[in-house]
Image (cartoon, rainbow, N blue to C red; front, side, top):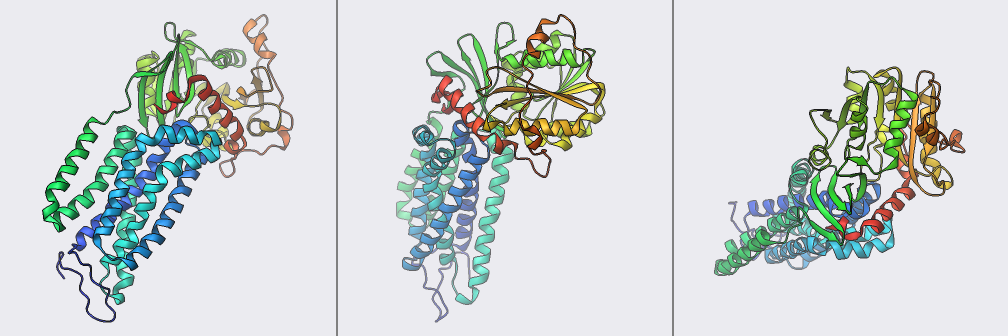
Length: 524
């Protein structure tokens, strides 16, 4: 059978023919492209929803749930329609509608997520994902069973034909996932990616109608020209601009790890990742705005006053870099996201000639480096959550290998030290006590709200406290013992529920940023 041969009816085991000639290669290409787009939409969805709800467990769970439910419903209805009406025109009309709904996602993003946010973090992420991605994914789910019916000519070949169709669809999904995660998201704007996906879907019905309906070729060509014009002149997210009165967006970029923004609010410059403030400073002096940065420096001076070289895990806006350089310390920084490094150098004055910056995962660096340090400072966040592989007993033991005698580990965490939401900090404290000779915990007052929690631990006896050091005396009064830490779990690579235990804090932190800066900053 040639590529363009119409599927004939040849007997009782045959399937009724399609009234329009459809090359089998065209059907396979359709299945490949739609399978590709399905996974691309699921992956890019985390960047669409992330600035409002984060990119943690709830958002991934919401997107996976919406994708599976939408595809399941689409598979069912697509199969039913294929049995009732086996016409290729119907298949490509479905794809056309899916393309239109994909084009609508960047336009509907702000109103849908604003509406969904009223339901809180979990239900809001689920509703926002459903409103934005559910309709297009539902229609794309209809494609595979419908195309399978068009592709299958004999019932005795049904198994091999179905297997081929799903293999091609899965191959498309595989390539789409790799391309989206490893290349497209770190390289292009999210709105442009969505528009390109819509255009890719639109090409399928365009090719079909031009080939099968030559008389409509001119109309289809005009439609493609209009869509291409919209893509070229579509209002993109501004690189810089005004979001809300008094707040200016200086920089916006998207990486594999999140959406980055640098904003100016009054005299302050703030670094946001997925809508969560990571650091802030006075741009005129590079003075750190968060109090915990100075407290980390005070703890380092108190517990290792002879420190000469520090490993900083997580760069952010470089607050700690500026402070430690002022004290003449040698600094190595390990930062996993090159976009963070670029933004910190351009907007926060981090001088790459004065600090050694390595693009890598913090734990991998700790495991492989041959250097030794007087202190390791763990100040890494993915939006509001902490990387769990940097908060395990195995990692704490690995840090001891690279510490000089008297070396210490410092950790910045966000949470409560009292009440039912203290479980995550209690688990970190228990893990530190099981890994080091000593450990302590310091907290900003008041205790009835979440704030930065600073942990310090060492394998050698702690030095005596300096006399008359006012900075230390102020911080010493903030030392806390988290009640019930003995019953908290020890965090390991095999069992680490720290982000689940701290989920209420993450929700409150995101709401605090939203209330302070306004939703427009997160979604613009």
